[in-house]
Amino acid sequence: GLYDELARRLPSAGISVLQVAYTCPGAHRFDDCVADVARAVALAAAQGSVVLVGHSMGGAVVLAASIEAASFAQHVLGVCTLAAQTRGVPSAGSLDALSSAAALVVHGTRDEKLPVSCAREIWQRLNASKAEQSQRRFVLLEDT
Image 1 (cartoon, one colour):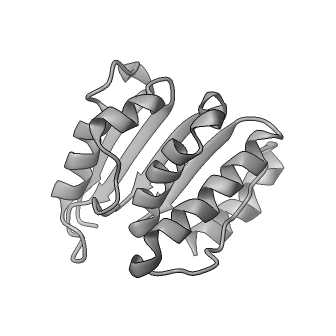
Image 2 (cartoon, one colour):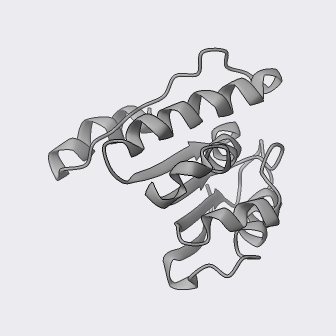
Image 3 (tube, helix red, strand yellow):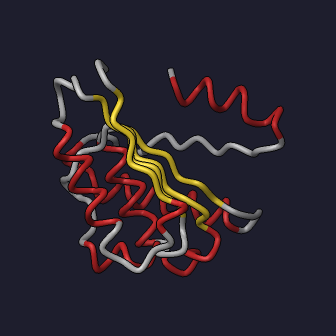
């Protein structure tokens, strides 16, 4: 899948990859998934800067984990959500902790599982802060 492809390609560009497999996956275990990623953030932050990427539920998980791992916030360079759900996404006030991080919110206009309104809501929450807008992007992929 996408994550496996990134894990294969990024190291040759000098970018380390830490791919997280949830210990107890599933929507009913959202908090457990957040804790798994927060632990991974702490581990990765000890080595350098971190960019978190999450798809669907994983998008909400990376946003929540970046807040839960607040003591490592200075190491979070950015977050990227791909067709993310809104359930579990922190409030705009909480996401203010990411004001210095870059953000990329991506969603397909023909997504049949999660509506584009999810991406728009996440985008609004992320941009309610005083974040540097030049490091933030909202991308709608037509016909996907």
